Length: 111
Image: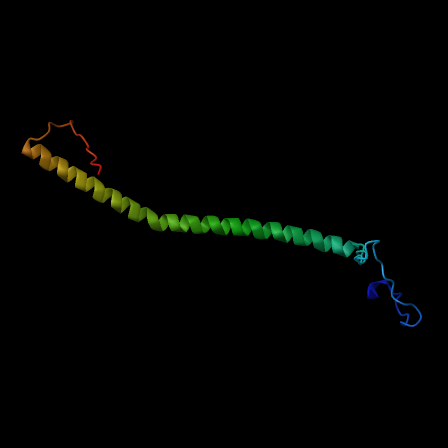
């Protein structure tokens, strides 16, 4: 209500203006017009938002690369253990005469 008074006028000289719809609801006061400083600050804020989003994306990518670099040696080690296990089993099988070289069969048991 106070936004519609004339500046500097006391209350008794100019009563507040009540702007109501025919349904009996109050209307919001009209928004202020944006000045040149508001537009400049809006553009600077938009640019700052874009820079923050880019920095956040780079940070996310850096964290992903860091976690990948931590997990890569574990994956390589697990692969080497699996390779050594299969190689050792094939070596024992060949020594026992169970399979000729090159005739390796993998069997998957399902329950």
